[in-house]
Length: 329
Image (cartoon, rainbow, N blue to C red):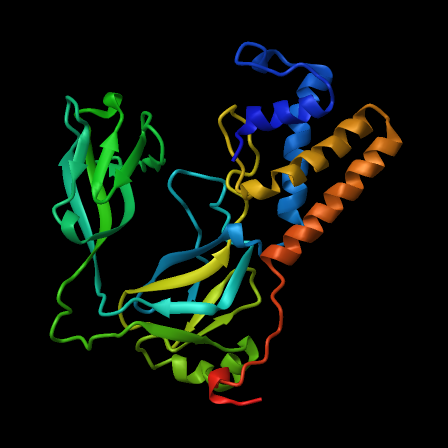
């Protein structure tokens, strides 16, 4: 996929404008600056044309914990993106529980090394599952987490090893995380990988609400509440479970800004971005006929993307494999 500066220069070539380079890139003003903005305008138009583009689809794990029935999971990917506001659409038929998994919450106190490498590997790194935060001690001020190089008060984590900035060397910290037990403790029944069936919110209220006031166990059903992206499970969980949720996320990143940034749109649809950007550039130059022509190509490109990436033909299957060699015609 072309990066941001390459896309801008392809757009500028169509407009018979001089290409930008590493020197002229930060100096752009007027129409030169607008060619950058036009790429992002077209990019967001494509992203917003559908909620469920396949290139925005992920299977995201989150934890359900004992005694808690309602969840609003956030989605944070590494490297960091503009995805912390949660999914834009949830596949309510796409929930499952991981097999034979019991998670334990751990908390470890340590001191960040004063010399490189300024890192800490948790004691359960072989069974490490998920980070749950880092705090200074005794102040309990929380670190922020990033997926790039850490800065003061910011950390990164990779498979149970936490990395910190040089200025935090010598600081006392608390590391919270989850790890898997293996095998499953004898006092707990093993769980196979399990699909969680979606039910209607009204059905849950009318038939399962009273039961869930007292009953606990592995979740059998998932339902959406009247709060956006809030997820309910039934019955109330009796322990920590790793739950997989299929969903569609906002674009990553929301805008391309640095020269090397790339979009999430497949490379074969790069011309659709350029057609949309052309429309905005011709509007900027008040060239209505050329803007209309570019907009027509842009809309046709989005229509083609929708047909090829989302629309699926309805096929009736008999469940029987026909072998023509068994027949004489």
